Length: 427
Ligand SMILES: [Zn+2]
Image 1 (tube, protein in one colour):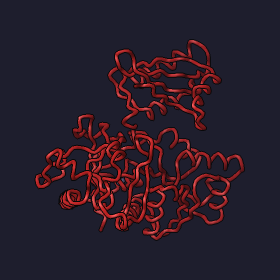
Image 2: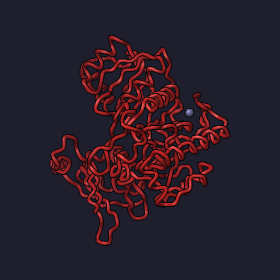
Image 3: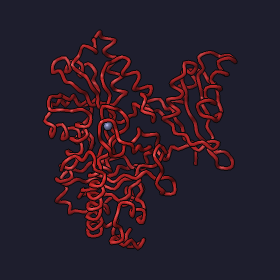
Image 4: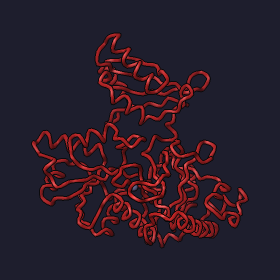
């Protein structure tokens, strides 16, 4: 397989061929899709193009959780790895991979590292786990192997050890969760390490957003790059899709790998959205043997951009995750997602700390209540905060000013170790 950078026509032909293969495969081997096809009278011979996918009902996270075993298309003896992801109903969801699936995963991540300016001359320090059935860890590991680059598998946490190893083995890149990179920076500051004199020049950022949807760095991304002169590459993936969307050096959205996946962005009525419009990432895996998925709704809300990228690739790009579908707030005619609210509230020095609470009012509409710790307890500060929120949100949420002690009580009410910043009280 070669990475296809342009020729939209070729991509279409390849996707159609792989889609047809998938449909035949599912109708033969997948208990779940066999039943779905028969129940909804789907004639797979009528699906001739990617656009025809709209004739097939979507698959939800609940389907995958409730009928997890029915998604397996192969005998158990052919399963090489059992990976898992958190489900919607509490217990984890299993994703079983064959040898070919693991190779596909490696190829996918190899492309991702290439896209993020990786070469065999790089050395990557992996600051994440390869255990606990975590697919991403294995994906990075095997992608880097395929790239022929060097690797240091250090695992998550322990800033002292991370820095000691950076000093000793001189990695050029790190793969880490952005908030952990902040911890590394903090530790370096406290112990007098001059981070800009180290060998590290780039970071592959996983699990958390570093950008706003206009590609500018968000608070987290800014905090990292203000302290550390490294290039950040964001990557978005999920266990179910077994495929990553990774940024190139332009940093303008994660690049799509159309030979591995068909991606649709759908609205609440399962209709495709236009570019620059939030929609739910819905995927159809191509070339997966163990547990292929057809029109699977991931629950992640993103936007897509379809103009060619300055790097030369012409396939579409995905924004960072705007939010989770189930956290969507419809407030006074506006759609809001917690991550955007977090950024908004983090940005203002008048706001020292906050908790966002969402609840349903008596007629079932979403209401937003912000618990805020104001920098100053006076009317002027209150006016500035309200004017700012009105300008940025175009709606006025309810505000309740609280003290530092009071906010901590709210944030740690459920005996959690991390402060809770978003409380969803909707039915
Ligand atoms: Zn690009």
